Image 1 (cartoon, rainbow, N blue to C red):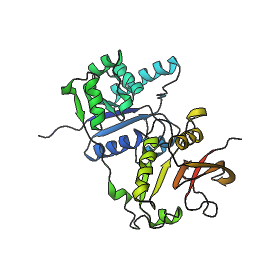
Image 2 (tube, helix red, strand yellow):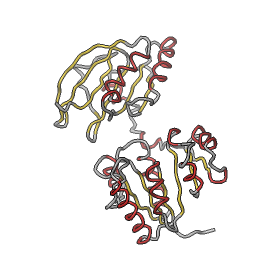
Image 3 (spheres, rainbow, N blue to C red):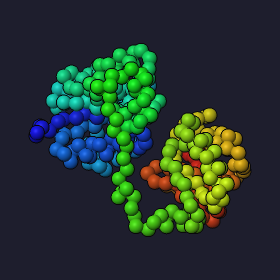
Image 4 (tube, rainbow, N blue to C red):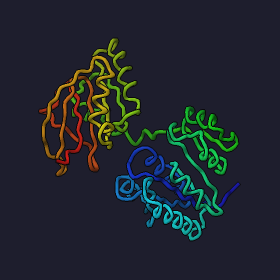
Length: 308
């Protein structure tokens, strides 16, 4: 049975090209291809906005969506979302974080309200969040573990759906079988395990490295390639996180080498770690490439911005 095209407003309190950002763009692209109208509200000024524009989406103006903003910005956002709902006859407000979920509920008007949980930590079991869940028309979990947490939080079964994440493998099929990456990081023909995740606390790197130590027993030539970005400060900064990983993973020895180099007109401080790991940091709109004459097999390159 044919249905009319819908107008869907995505609210995403995120500025980084991580977490919810790419799934939102992929979903929005699919909805648009099916004839629906998609509006996108995000935190402007960074990679998410850039990637949205590249995908053909013009982010809505006049929205802050800052989680730690002042109450006047929150009130302004509520007024702005209400204006958008009325002006564009929005059918569905699809939210992706706690902050924009509350905002969507406060400003929804006649629109249906949907929330997607992109990670397990986002599901909360205390009041008043549970009341917000009961007032949401549909909630989506992107994995079995998240679905279980949502059930434990008391979300009604008839409002909870699971839509497992997918990867479009054709986007990564460059035809060289990974030869460029192997050459760049001097991986040779060794078996490689890769992980793409933000370098921060509680992201599972500790378990990964401990598991990799066991892999090395049977596969001593194996390599672990970590690709990520660190945005934290102090104890949450990438340097401290990496040091913590060394301390928790037996057999990882650290050295304190510091070199200075210029890349995209930014000064960087790079530290080497003796282990068969490679940490590829991202800066600006591209990967940080550590020069081959400095990096050697069995060495990890970890880079962070040097503001000094």
